[in-house]
Amino acid sequence: MAASSCNVRVAVMGATGYAGAGVATYILGHPCAELIWVGSNTYQGARLDKACPWLRGRTNLVCQAQDVDLAARGADVVFMAQSNGFAMANAATALNLGAKVIDLSGDFRIKDTAVYERYYGRQQAAPELMAEAVYGLPEITGDAVRGARLVANTGCYPTGAVLGLYPLLAAGLISDQDIIIDATSGVSGAGRAKHALAYHYPEINETLTAYRVGNHQHTPEIEQALSMATGTNLVVTFSPHLAPISRGILSTCYARKAEREPVEGMAARCREALQAAYAGRPFVRIMPEGESPTTKATLGSNYCDIGVFEDPRAQRVIVVTAVDNLGRGAASQAIQNMNLMLGLDETLGINQPPLFP
Image 1 (cartoon, rainbow, N blue to C red):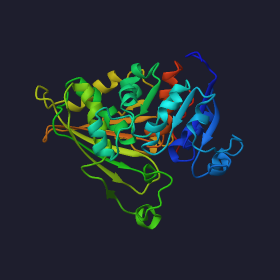
Image 2 (cartoon, rainbow, N blue to C red):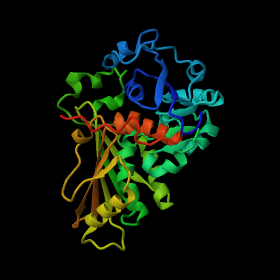
Image 3 (spheres, rainbow, N blue to C red):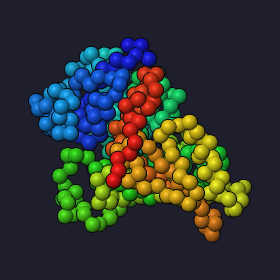
């Protein structure tokens, strides 16, 4: 297939989970892609629109067993939207059959094997693919994504945090020491197949919960991505929270100003740096002075909204970002990566405005 082809054949493994179903939905509306195969453990043998009723009238595909050999034959791109461990065991087969692979799990995001194994609690069984995989955050690593065979789609929490902080670190406006990130996600981040008591409506409604504080698997991913901006081994404090909303992530990031930077006008300089860094990038929106992003304003979209504030007393810059965890934090970002991999316009299939209310 030519890189600029507008006849991309797509297979989605894990097509009935939140992320995989999102990918399938976007592909069905993509002007240059065709959904030819879907796999599901839970709904094997059932039509996709049985598992995903919003797709009635859009597809007749039947969910197949999660056989990568069947998925990759005839496909130009295979999306792997399965649990951690699946892609590292199956990506090589798809690649050897000539398909490009976009992995939505954490299997190939972390380049340090020891760090991966510590945070994910499993052996890295495909270190050669881990080394090859390109980290898929288009505004930061887009040049490397173009032409890649294997892309590790950025995690949901790191997406907003890294987009908000990376340009400020690269410009030397904030210190790489003592960065704190508090992020709150909707319940869909736990996945569609969760049945634990903590995710039942009476347990999760009308309460906020911090979880995996100090050992969340997205901590080293954030550190690795931000370290690319500084050339140092950056360390952050990251605390995730769960909110009783379906989808969305709001991240509040606290960073000390760089030592050489004056206190006065910190937020304005950071806002200008963000505007310059993302000029011409269609999916990052910088908020006007004094305005803070909301998850509602990014719902169902590929946008990342970024607001910047200052606390002169503490000599800190405060960056607030909002993304849809299932869109920009998963499915639509995966489509953006696919577009770049194939030499297509990065906005194809994902340029819809957010849903409201």
